[in-house]
Length: 512
Image (cartoon, rainbow, N blue to C red; front, side, top):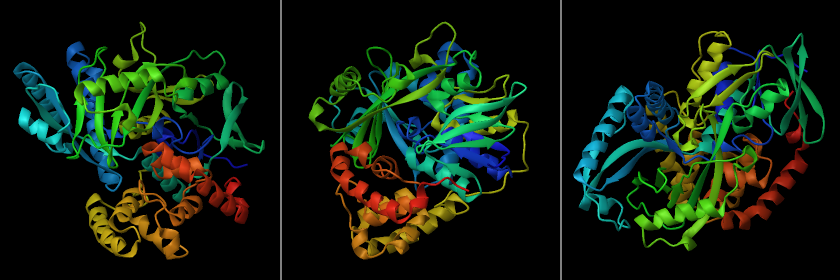
């Protein structure tokens, strides 16, 4: 048993970011995760780093400064993440189609404000498109349109960025414990003193700290009521659904925002690792149903997509997934699609601090707000680049460019495999190659995503991977891209992990 300055429960985006920001300020931190980092919502997003075009529209329609503040904050964070991990995150141009001249002007004014709110953190400015230019960018579109607008947001690998936050924090001294469910708390005079966790083997551990933070996302209410049974629920869970298509509907690398659906929601059609990502619906649901892919929501997405791309067939779907969004419960029962995804740092009378609401793009501001609520503990934050990155975005870009040329010549899968490894590991791709036992271990196992035995070994040794799902769903995105292909490789992945775990049983033991 150790005593920490801070115990963080939950290693999704918010918890991992808090652990990293805390250790940067000299705090002694433990990060506890019931399963695998990013197993829930943090690996199931639409893969966008965005300010929130929809929130901007709602801000003006409702004269709501809270939503305007959220947009401004998110636009700054969008640039921050692209700079921190340029090999995982990039600018993405998105087309917004318009049906007539008035609509073109309306959205032009809104997206002009979007650019202005970003200030110095802006990406490429918005530009107008005529109907022919829109058709050239998205040749499958078969609607009569006036034209459109082309604006910028960011696209990223959510699960790998989450993992890098965890691993960077661990390298800086955070004690990271996965497969560790918090089952209770110790209290003295009505205040929390320690969290009690239980591992998969049934063994319990005690984690003592003056500050205990609940960063469990959509499960936050369960932990709040475990600490204080009379705590009222605070969250509304909204399920987002996504489909992946084998064909590329975005051959020019430009996404599409569909602004009108029959019930007022918006849909995205985005390039995704050579395929097409379609999402997301927004339906309130119980927390335990947040990852369920339902026939009704699948049909909803298919029907709306076919209105815009009549040549699309549901037979082209290669993967689907759903994830829950933690929204702070609104007064008056507003629908989840109209709830601003603002966050809150709550402290219960027992002392439990909960991170409520928020979204991927702004998880760092939620972490910083939590540190302020805790009294600004710790010293000035020390520079701490993410693993795989250099000190600055420019240095990372230059080093990655040099490394890419080397890897293309060294890898059996050539340019495709080099792009995959750099896009996942950044500068750590060099370490992965150096640790490969032989060239055969680097042979790609799939034509969809060129994963290899050497990569799986690296995931197990350095990246906390313990199951075939860890390897195929979150260390690479194969399962999110092509479920049949991931199923084909499951036996091979499980067999290798069984061999590695037998050779190093200590890999399942808690950190000292």
